[in-house]
Length: 77
Length: 240
Image (cartoon, rainbow over all chains, first blue to last red; front, side):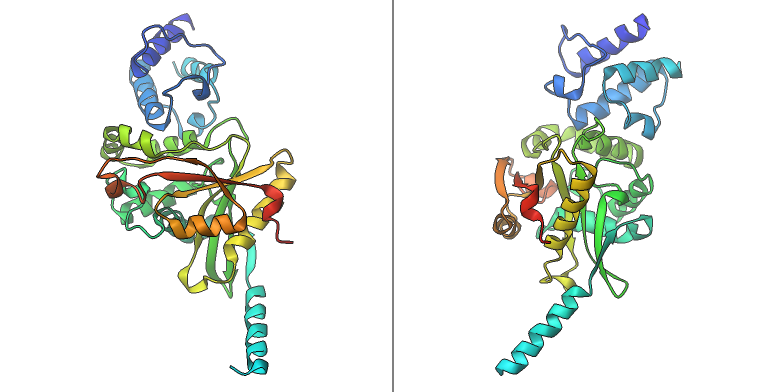
């Protein structure tokens, strides 16, 4: 899981253009200033590319926070 | 018109009003719902954001919206189960979507984004990405926990029957049963749609947020240069 967290954190840093951004399991879109629908689309595409996975539509709409996303990535690897 | 004839005319109109059936929508209504989603977004403008922002024709956008409706996901207007419709003699007359924003912990924009990613072509998403600055200027965020009234559409042949009012009231009744903590209803329209804004103000809605883009090309992509978010206390929409 440690490796997943670091790679995901790096994706967030790149997408939100913030090299000091840290992620937590409880973090949601409400906690990150520029997290909107378009950055969300970019983030999902980037995450899929980095981990070589594909999220299903119904998985995407059930991810309530970063923790749900990390668990789903781990499940798919 | 003689008084007796006028009275008789009113009586007929009243009976006709009562002939509308309000019911929950289902997947069999998806053609009408897709039309409602696009037409309600356009309002009096020739452009819908479902098309303009993504550089898609209305025909393609409508086809994709029907596929999104097939998914029957919760939490945004692209779900048949959130719609209530009015029909008369088997003819669809009006539709309004309603859901409580974030009731399952997921904001409607997140569901919409996932559906667009799944069904809109890659080039359409790339087009939207290029317009991020404009989108940020126009988009207004919804209030978590508030009943969202979206895709408010009455077929032109059935206007003047207070169908939107009746559908709003039916949504409030449903909301009060399913989400007793919800207190407010809200809806959005575009700043140029003055007729709709006036209509909602007459119902008791107040403007709580407004956006405005000064980009000279905004009307090529959106039905308006900004959005208006309007709110009302739920009980004020009940018509009994």
